[in-house]
Length: 463
Image (cartoon, rainbow, N blue to C red; front, side, top):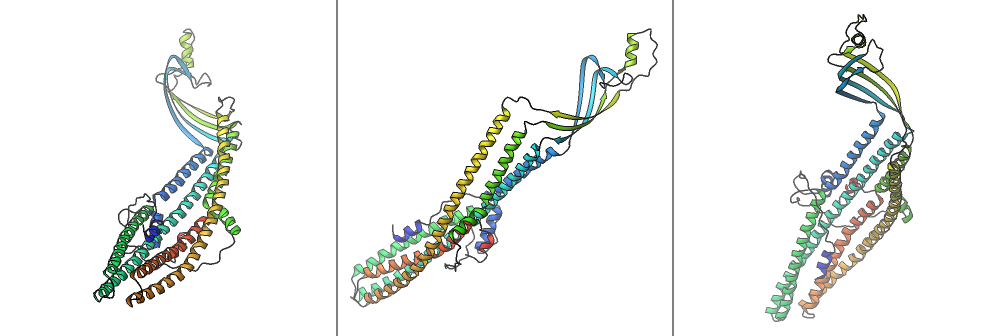
């Protein structure tokens, strides 16, 4: 494989999967348009936002425990013996019937549970914040991946244009070589060597175009775009002026404090601590206030006086028959104390403690990973900037050497091999310079991503 193909292969990116429903505006697609579309249609980002909504639902459910609970109930019962209702009422109000109907409205309100419910609500709130920061980080990653693939596509455009320029140069060289062969100033094998190199360059050009299409497909997948993307608006590769970066220690401290996933894990840790405390509080008593209104009824009730008259026929009792319905009101305090649950609470406490320890370890691992990412991003940025400076000199030197070799060949003082080698060296230098200039922009985006400071506004000035 030629040097140019090796450079192109090093830039190949894996394909991402996505879907979308709407298309960007017609015309050329700018980097800002691509990022905006991705933020609106990226499936991964939407999934994280849905997770935030799900956790908000769990928070609402947890808050409901502190609100009054009103239940409506109805019952119809057929007994073998006659039962009295309402229970505990004076004999004058008591009724008897084997068939009994009841309808009740019961109001319950948590009075005190030693802050257990309050801790559960706070834990649910922390989980919502954790999901929100995780979505923020996913948004930064979507912005970065969209910008990186967009710049990669422009890099392939640079390589394709450079290759096409070299093909035109080789074609001109072939025409000139044929003229020299016809004039007896060059041998036919020189023209054959030029045609061979020209065929190789055309093969390289086809490979670059294929790689560019693959990168466009990856960009569309990250954006959540269906179909073929509009043409990307081209901007020349140039290393933007880089402001002096703070020291490594300052950047590391900034990354630890700013990265959304660190803040997400911190909220998960707080939620786990509250969850463990809530599990331990479940061993304490719970006090509820309860109020109820119960409506009783039956088909043919018998009052207590009529019941006595049936048992003592000689007794003279004049009492009206009771009505079918009777209403009872209840107001009280309910205290529950857990005694034995078969080890359920112990298992919950063990699980909550283990989860808390896992989160603590995960945060430490994340902090170490962030420190490594910041150091690598800084090194990559410095390396890319150094390559740009070196390759600019290399391109200028290659252009001078090619110009001299062409003049020598036409004057019969050199051979075609030197001209072809100079052509190859110039193309390689131009390709490397283009990649290095694009890599500076990507490296700066990578550093912003590792610091947790990458926002869509960062791309307002274009790539």
